[in-house]
Length: 595
Image (cartoon, rainbow, N blue to C red; front, side):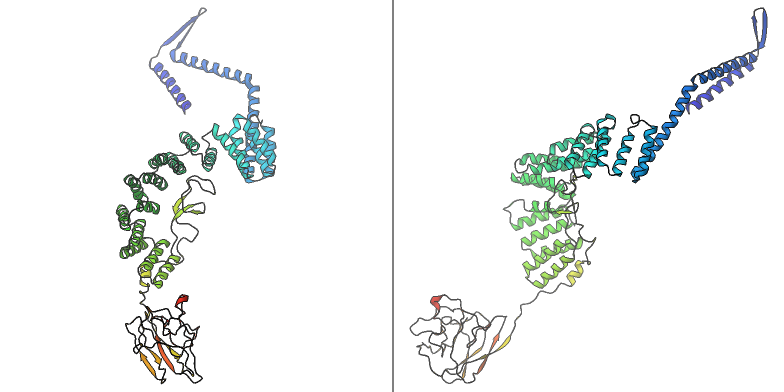
């Protein structure tokens, strides 16, 4: 463009000059060796211009003839170089495509057209051809030769690093990356590999220094660099929290300045203040992070900041979090948990249902099941909410490279990537629940609270007939000893008369220390009270009475069993489920235990 403008300007100046001469006519006289030559100014100017042009043309012809051998050599050299670069380009494309035959052919052609000292890419083409053909040792030797050349050092180290990673030699790969990062920290692959290595070994200070070098070299953007530095500071704070809480707190606060919503850094700083019993500063750390990023771990630490607080105090602190971040599932869930601990079931249920409407997930329905268990104890309602939890999406957790962890880690245990863990729902399931979970439909299908059941069962009890022979046992019979005391519901039973065999109706009484005699028992029956013994002071536990029965058909009596409790009866079999065996100590075997 500059040459075109210069040419136009020169032409314009010449035209202006000739126009100026044409407007001013005159005669030019020249006398030379007795000859007088006269001509006009326009002719004289034209002759001068023609002479200059002739001289320039003559000079160009002479210089062209003089430089023609060199120009010919340069032409053929350029043509050869172009053919060499064309072959090199074709060879690299073939190597990238995996065409070993064409790559090797182009390598030989390139070596014939170009010099390896003139073009270092020939070594790269040879190494790539060796890799395609499986000649890994030859390729490694070529990469080592390139690493020794200052011009191709970075390219050689890159090739050695990739080959070491491919063969599983991670220590060697790390060494190559460190060598490259030492001289060229602006290389992203070298800096990233070295940074991950420092993080895996816990060398946080070296990792922070390397990250600062990358930031200064503009390898990574400023926002990403600040985030990664905050993660490194948090990891450093967690490591020295037990031995140096104050130093850990300073690092955590520096991390929060770089990343205001970094939850692990806020937790470390708040725990450090709580160790000093400084609840106010701990709350000042947690509350801004809660506003930016509500997290259940922050809620748990905030609510349980003081171990001596009552359940009501913890409920108030949970409500404080809800006021900072209203209509949020984490806020509602924290209040519901605190209300359940405080036995405020109405508030706990209301907050849990509100949280379920915002985001129905597993923990919310399990909390509703806990509320039902604590308040009503109705297993039907508890199982209903647990069934909803089975179909609901999973709760968020710390996830990185397919690994789900309850605790945050700065580095992924799988890939070694820094800042890999994210708080999100695990993706080990489908995008949504298997079935749609609707809180309203779940509430509509919630069973009513079950009332206590009163079961009645008719039991026919064979009553033994009059014994053939009276046992030789002396018993003390009170005239009004037809009453007994029981903790079971009122039961009317029939007791046979000893003398006549006619049934006598026995009704419960308030006398607790009177003993109902058992007639017809065996002499060693534990249900027989001897005459010389004192009356029972309190009702004893039931035992199975042993009786003597006659060969005649025994009459039957009826016992009503209520509320699912087995009522003992006379004449029952020893293994009858209606008879409750005695657990009285050995010194009370002589007592008559009915209930």
